[in-house]
Image (cartoon, rainbow, N blue to C red):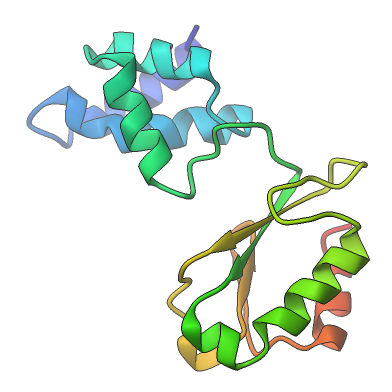
Length: 154
């Protein structure tokens, strides 16, 4: 069930659209900001609140790769795997993250601190290879930079 705070926030967003169903992305983001991810039950609750079917909400949720449909770690690492990042050393960075965190893409560390995901583009080709941790963009990555960056999130 949506909390009163979530309902209020979704209603506020829906005022900016001609139909409340148009606020579905914002509703997903609201729920994720409060719960960390959007569960199947949350999809049903959002659908009911916005007068949509659960399938309609789920199709939006699964289309956007920044809506998490299963639990994630305290910090989400999004490693760009675009052509630019591949050319500039994506594989070396990914190998280092795998070894350092002892996880594969799509997994979360045992302590629940980090989830490692790939993303098709961060729009930072001029700083390739690049990654985001939470809302922080990090570019021109090297193995040494990765180690320093990760320390900030421990």
